[in-house]
Image (cartoon, rainbow, N blue to C red):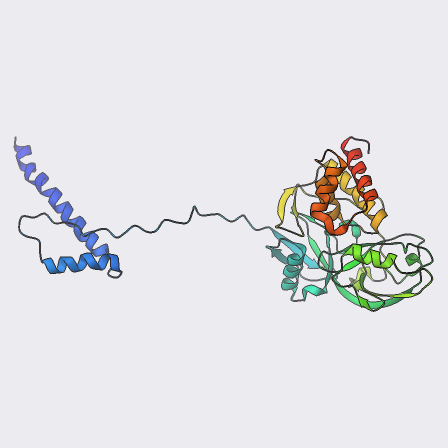
Length: 353
């Protein structure tokens, strides 16, 4: 057949041509440096060209690359929050923090100030509004306002009764400040003392770095009838806030942040994104926060949330006390407080509140 006779020589030569081309490509692609490829190249030079009739051979392939440590991990998108200084500033953007101290450091970096100047932060309000105080949770769409150090003032206080009428909280980074002033109390008579004032010293003893419960204990231990001095630092105020003496409303002190998801900041461990607390958690946290104020003179939504988390799945008060001691042993809560908290959590769980 003419077509078959004309094409058969091409089909016999094609494999040889293809092999030769492949050998040439492989030889040109092989790296010129590196021990694995140098040795085969040296051998081909000493043995000389291939004998006639022998088929060309490709040089050895380079050794395989070492295996990767594992599949590539795609980092989780970084959450970005908008922030301003409460007394007025341009808007900045912050991300990459896992606790309150890191949050303050990020804000300080954006506005070129020292993190030690930040007293506390509020969410979605530039005012000294304790309902909006940043605690352990930030809504993913919340706007953060940082309140920085303003004027320092000293006031002399004389106890006329056991309680001063102060509720203390702290910013999670070493500053305790006034969260509530009880109407008609000793402190309420001193009009220069305001909600939001940072308590810097008691009788010239610095309390910077102390937790709120430590400061509350020091104030409770001041004897009646003996004057003592408080050194206070008020937050810097915007023009529309000058002269205000803010008092936190009683009705919704424990209101949680808004938003479908929140960033939960923890004093230990990394921050996590989680669903907004459900109705049980919100009511139980509010009740526990009220008990903290009654027994210890402090308010702290993060602390109250941690207590509720420790107790919501426990079957009896002994298990609850053991769980609480494992995470909050430093507080040394009195037994009567633990039983009241256990009862409050049970009341909320069973719909009695």
